[in-house]
Image 1 (cartoon, rainbow, N blue to C red):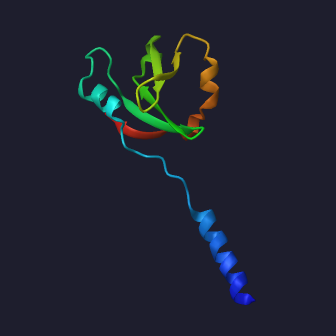
Image 2 (cartoon, rainbow, N blue to C red; image 1 turned 180 degrees about the vertical axis):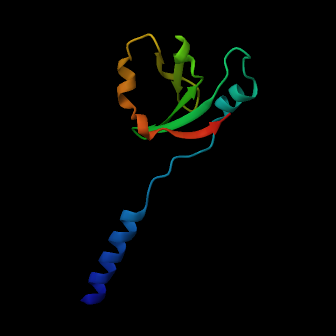
Image 3 (tube, rainbow, N blue to C red; image 1 turned 135 degrees about the vertical axis):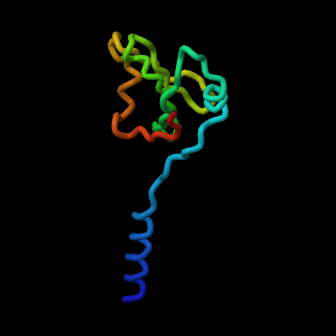
Length: 107
């Protein structure tokens, strides 16, 4: 009986210790953007956050500091959300947690 109890405890601890790690691999379409950057739009960081099982990538140009626009895209570079410095934040930004972004590329 003790062996079975110990087995359940060990399995429970193992299940709890597993964490879901976000892929730090830069998607191909974003890598193409990084390789062929517009001299007037400099990408500072690429950050990732998982939302509803899908990875969302924030291509951070710091454009919001100068009334510009920032994009959040999926791994196919389809725009999922867009926000700017002088605008009200759109509804789509509510799904993101500020402290959950993980930097996967930095200039």
